[in-house]
Structures are given as C-alpha cells and as structure tokens.
Length: 584
Image (cartoon, rainbow, N blue to C red; front, side, top):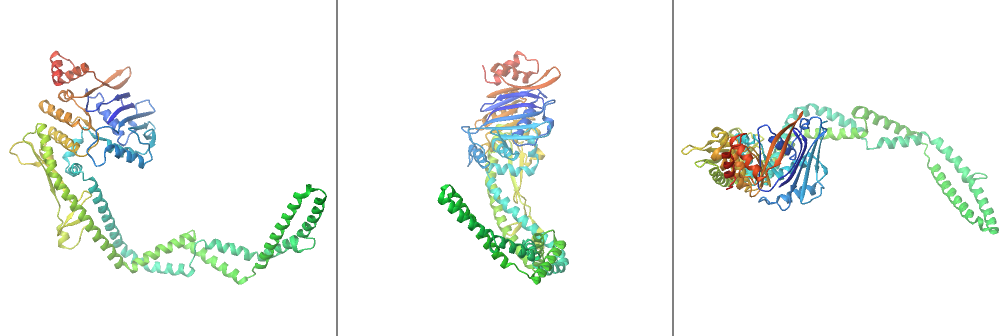
C-alpha cells in the first residue's frame, strides 16, 4: 500500500505531503483544482516519461516521492506475493530490501531525470517494473481502451493468470519469426552470392597463397631487425665479451685480483667482510653475463637468403593489408567471412533445407504453445463472464449480458498453394494467423437491455456503461492476481444518482483487498470513503498553488454537501451528506 506521498515544485503544486490509509481513499475538489496533477505525479513513480514542463516555474527541479509498505499489507492472491516480487526485483538489482520501499523521481528544469529506490540511484526500467508490481493506475481516459478490441485479450489473460504461459509462447514465436527472417535473407542473398562467388574465390586464392598468421608481421619485423644488423650485433657482443672476460686485463680478472686483496684486508680487519661477499657476487654476475654474451655471439646468423625471404614475405603481407584491411587481423577476418559466404553459395540449397527444417520444427512447437494458450483462455471465459455479470448487476446493469468471443483467422492460401506465411501456425489440419498474443482474436460483447442480443462492446456501450464495465473488470481482476494499490481517476464518468451509489459500493467492496485511491465528483461515492482528501487551488499574490489536505468528519460533511448542492451549502445539503456517510 502507499503509505505517504511527497510532491514538491510539480506543476501547480508547491509542496504536498500526505499520508494515505488502507481501504477507500477518496479525493475530491473543484474542476481545475489539480486533482489530475496528483495522478500525473504518481505516474512518475510508475516509470512514466517526464517532461521539463512539469517543473514549477522558477524552480530548479520537481520531486515526487512515495513510501510503500511492502510487508504486512494485504497480499493479492498470487503464486508469488507482492512482497516477494518486490524483494526479488531489489535483490536482482543489488538494492537493500526492507519492509518499506521508497521510490523517488527528480525532474530537472534542464531536462535531466533521476530515479531513486531506497535512496539509491536506479534506472527508469526498474521503477517501471516496481510500479507494475505495486500500482494499477486507471486514468480518466483509460476506460476508452475497452473500446479497442485488441486490448480485450490482455484483460482475459490477466484474469486467467496466463502471463507465464503467454511469455512461453511469445519466446518461441519470436524465435520462429527470426528463423523466417533468416530464410528471407538467404533468398535475398542468393543472386548476390552467385554474382560475387567468382570474386570471393579469387580473393580466397590470393589470401590463401600468402596464408597470413595472427601477429606474423611483428615476428618478421623482429627477425629482420636482427638479420639486418647481424654484423653490428657480432661486433658489439665480441667487444663486450672481451672487455668482461676474454681480453687482457678483463673485468673478470680485475675482480679476481680485487677479491684476493679484500680477503687479505679482511684477515686484518673484519670490517671488510661485507665487501668480500659483494665482490664475490660481482664476479658471479660478470661470469653469467659473459656466458650469455658468448652464447648469443655464437648463435648470430649471417643468412642473406633468409633475409631476402623475410623481406619478400613482409612485402606480400603489406600488400594484403592494403587490399583487404588495415591489419593482418582484418585480412584474416575478411578471409573467414568470404569463406563462409562462398561456402553458403556452394551449398545454398543445403543451407536452405536446414533453415526450412528448423522453421518447421519451431512452428510445431509454437503451434503447441498457442493451442495450449487458447485452451486456457476458453477455460477462463466462463469464469470471467460470470464474475463480470455479477459485478455489472451490482453496478445497476441488472439485465445485462456479457460474453467473450474468441475467434481465429484461418489462412486459406496456406492450404491452397502450399506457401505458409511467417506468422501462420498449424492447429489441427488448418493454418491460422498468429500474433504475439497467439492465434486468438478476443472481443468483449455486451447487452445492457433485456431482450437485446449482445453486440461488440464498442458499438453498444455508452460512456457510463463503459466506465462500469471497466470497474467490473477491475473488480474481477482484483480477485485473481492484482497489485495492492489501485488508483481510479474519475471511474464514475457518465454515471450519477443511484448508479453512482452502486459504483461507490463496488469501490468500497473492492477496497477490502487492495488499497484504493479514487478521484470522484460524485457525493454518493465520496460519502463511502474510509479516508477523504480535498484538493483546492489557492491564489496567493501572483502565484497559484494546489493544496491537498485530509478532511475531518465535519469537513467531510461540508465537502460532500458542496458536491450535492454547489458552492452554497444548505442545511438540507448537510443533512443529505450525513445520510450518505451513514451518520445519524
């Protein structure tokens, strides 16, 4: 549940800090007071994109922060309780887990947006995942989504808890489309490969004739440097060897003489003992260095043929680099690529057969998943129809009929000419058009009057009826697997009087499980609030500010009376307000 909400410098809001309660939280206020601004601010905590326009004029940044209780709150009936979902998300992203979750958005006037989870910077994608698990926000115009038949399958899948099954299907469906795309690319490449086959063959022959190896150039240059300087290497190592060991009065002989003199001195005064050891070490170092110089000198190679061969080899490598890339690595990679292309051209039919077999196998797996998904949807239909009819009856549509139609689009040409479209799946002996939602086209049908046949919802429902159907859907989904906080921005659109009372009772009943925050203009709904807040717009000098405050019992009576009778509150209005609130 949402424990508290803090908003600062957001649109008309200078600063608001409010604590919500469990149950039904109602927000009322005059048109234009800023009720919808609150919903827009809350949407930022769901990971919605933000514009710099929301920053209050003259301020550097806008801040929206929500504190959510994720442990101990009523949990939805899900396989994985909400608290576990949030904990899992936080652990996966290396965030601290606690009973409370703090989510904050900061929008800079310069265009920068920052997100925080438990006071730690977080990506917007994580906020969206957390928001999806915590909040179901129904905006003023969201009920219009019911008028688009393509959204109906989502409602049905939500009700049937078919999310995991749908994800399994979508995974293999995407893989099928990828395989089909690869096949199309092969066909598109066919002529190109045929045209370039001779060129590839020539380039392969040219590169293979040299057969360049990784890092070969560096090795050749190193050996060339030694061969080209063989005489200088021999001369210098010979001179150095003579100076250190083999020549007259060499360093080795002088150290030997020095060693004997130090031993004599040490026999007289032990202060020379360290010096004796040091000169012995120097003798060993000179002997080892002299040995290395002698061995190196003996290995120096004077090989004009080898020198010429290496120069020729290096020239060929440089030529390959000029023709096929800036380095030998690029040349080798080019050879690998054209080899694969040449092999594909040589074995095109074989490769095409392999991909066709893979597509057939993947289509079969995908068809099985789609069929399983369809079967589960059929199972869910009867339950959702029964539940929504019951909710509609409570909302004043007593003679209503509601049904869910599931149809599949058969693809005749797949059977007639043997060509199978990428998005076709085989169910039984027939092929059907498929999408990321499977092979089912789901549409809600409704009749609100006795004796009338059901028709597509978009064609028969008025604004008020669509709002009630949406509320019925939300109520139904809340009983299956929904988030712990539901927000309704004027779900009462198009209804009034007795129907408004029914909508209020439905919200009250719904609020037993999730926490509800609802913006309304109907006194019949406001009177049923567990907690009531009022939004008002205050003009203070040159600035306009939106304020939200929690109402006391008497303030509630006055606010509801205003909703009933307008700005001038009468005694009759106050009496009616108390009756709506259940007060004597």
